[in-house]
Length: 458
Image (spheres, rainbow, N blue to C red):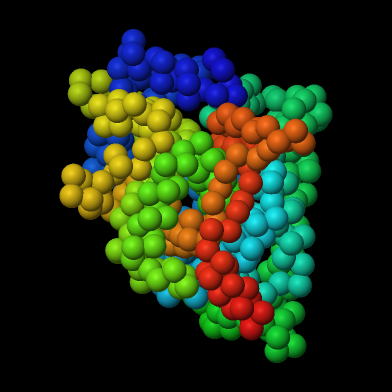
C-alpha cells in the first residue's frame, strides 16, 4: 500500500477487481468505489444507509472533531448544514457577486508581479472572501490565513483512511506521545493547539466588534445579534471555522491547478480569451451576469476539477446497516470511500483522461453537458459539499478575471531559456500543485486600467 498516494493503487486494482472492491486494512473492512455510477447508486439513491462517517480517534486527538466533514450523521450535523445553507445556498451565493469581483480584481493585480509559488496569492483571495462571509472584517485576517494553512497542512496528512486505520486497529497507540510516530503525527499536539486558537479567537473578535459597534455583516455577526434556539456558540464556532478551513484550502488549490493548466495548455487560454472578447467589450470586466454566455469558461472550471481532483479520495462513509449491491454483501459498519481519482480517469467517460481538454464538457453545439454542482468533486448524497455554489461562483469569477486580463506563460531563467513545468502534486487528503515557475503579462491594458481605477476608488 502506498499510503501517500493510495488512489493510484486503488485505480490500478480496478483493472483486476472491478469498480467496487473490498479489502481489509489492518482488519478494518473497506469498500472502494471506482465508478461514478456505483457512487450515485449507493451514496445518493441509498443515502439513508451511507451518510454517516466512521468514528476516528485521530480526529479528536488532533482537535479536528468539530469539523462538519467528519461528524457522524445526526442532529449535530443537521444543525451545521442548516447554518451553512443560510449563507451558502445557491441564491445567496450569487448575491455576493460584487464581493467576488472586488477580490478577484485584487488577485489579478497581485499576480502581475508573481513568478513562483502562487499559493500565497490564491489563498489570500479565497481566505479573504471566506473571512468576509463568515467573520466579516478581522484586524488580523492574514495571520488567520497563515495559521489556518498550517492547520490544514497537518490535518490533511493525518486524517487519511489508510493512516487512521493504524489507530483503529491498535487502540493502545492513543496512549503514546505523539513524537513516537514521526512525520505529521508528531505534530498532532500543534494541530490541536492551532484548532483551539482558530476555534475561539476570530469568533471572540467579532463579539468584541459587536460590543463596540464596529462589526460588519457576516455569518457570526448575524448569529450573535439574534436569538437562536437550536445552536450554541460552540456550534457556531465549529461551523464558521469549518467553512473557512475547507473553503480556503480546496478552492485555493483548484485555482493553483487552473494556473498550472494554463501554462501547459496555451491553446485553451487562447480559446477562452477569444470567447471573452466576443461576449464582453475590451474595456469591460466580466461579472456573473455574463456567465451564461461563456460556456467554454465554465468548461475550463469543470475540467480543472476533473483533471487533478483536489481530494483524490473522498472522506469515508460508513454503512448503518447491512446492504447488498450487485450480489456483493456489504456489512454494517463498513467504511466506504469513493476513489475520485479513478472517476477522473474513467476512459469510458473521459477519453485520453490525462489530457486537459475542456471541450469534453461541451455538446457538439457548444452547450454545457451537465450542471456544475453535480460534479463528483463535491461529493455525493447527504454529505455533498454545502458550499458548492459559493465555491463555483468564486472560482468562476477569479478564472474569468485572470483570463480577461492576463496571459499565463512559461517563465524564463537568467539565460532567457524557458523553464519547463511538470504537473507534480503534493500528497494527503487534499492535494495541490507543487510550486512551479510561470509568468504573467497583461493582454488588456484597458481592463487592467479599469481594475486599478476600481481598486483606487475603494
